[in-house]
Structures are given as structure tokens and as C-alpha cells.
Length: 90
Image 1 (cartoon, one colour):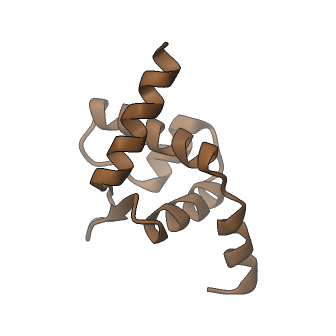
Image 2 (tube, helix red, strand yellow; image 1 turned 45 degrees about the horizontal axis):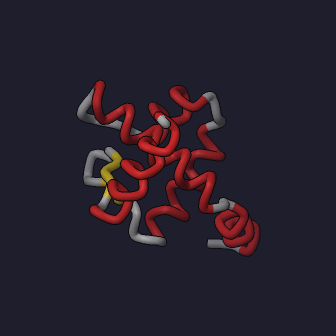
């Protein structure tokens, strides 16, 4: 990973991560296999932006990608997504 990629990963705020995790949570309710491109389309972001966020969240242990490049939340990621969803519903 080069310096530009490292700097971009640092720029992804926790609030932003919460939004990504909540979106992943919402998509999971609709479909089983979710890839970065699905998340980008759902959120209206570029695939490049989503890829950077995914890398950062993987590094933080919030999500992981399986052998088919499908995204899954860890228990920690799911907890953040559920709390964020609750906050946004109230």
C-alpha cells in the first residue's frame, strides 16, 4: 500500500464508517451477496471511495471479504451498524 492509500484510509472518519456499516446492514436485509460495487451503488459513491473505506474497515476488524469478494461484518462491525441504525431511526 502506498502513502496516498494510507492517507486516504486515515481520512475515513468514524462517522463515515458508521454510515458504511449501516448501509451494509441495510443491504444485508435485502440480499445475501454484497460486494463493494453493490455498496457503492446503494450509497451513490464511487467504487474507488468505497474500496478505500472497505480497506480501512477491514484493517480495523469491522468487516471482511470472503473468497468471492462478498463483504461481511464482524461482530464489532455489526454492533456499530445496529447502534447507528437505532440512532437514525429515533
